[in-house]
Image 1 (cartoon, rainbow, N blue to C red):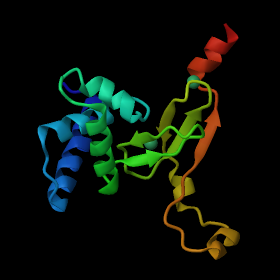
Image 2 (tube, rainbow, N blue to C red; image 1 turned 30 degrees about the horizontal axis):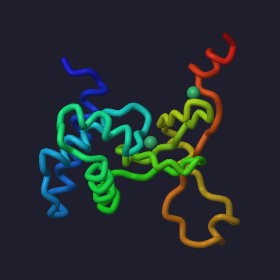
Image 3 (cartoon, rainbow, N blue to C red; image 1 turned 180 degrees about the horizontal axis):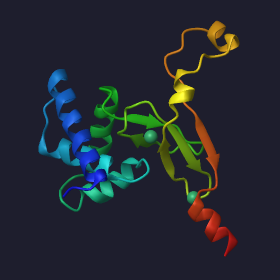
Image 4 (cartoon, rainbow, N blue to C red; image 1 turned 180 degrees about the vertical axis):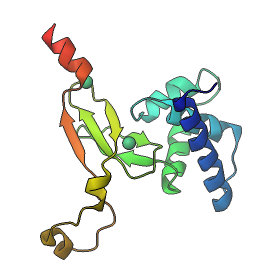
Length: 152
Ligand SMILES: [Zn+2]
Ligand SMILES: [Zn+2]
């Protein structure tokens, strides 16, 4: 029996294949492997993280190919770039509306959902500012693991 996480990854891959087809992008073995590793990676990988994993199965792949493939995914809305304070690009395969819990020590990024916030009316100062496309909350702090390590 597939675990919840495996099921979630299978759904993401299915969605990926659908979007590729609808955009006329070929679903090559290489693209599929790269996307799968991105979806499986806990906590929003960098291109280097993805390369490190994909390379185990695709021996001849280069980091440059991984960069270019992720850039192609990003351009077509298949993954989203997460902006971090230290300017390292991290990528998100979860395209549903969600927010991030960011640990400033281990740099982990976890998703969380906040439907109440998503439905909340923005203050008039924000509405007056211009056209709003999306809103995103970043909660920064020390994660449980780092907090524990810090105490010991
Ligand atoms: Zn941490
Ligand atoms: Zn996320």
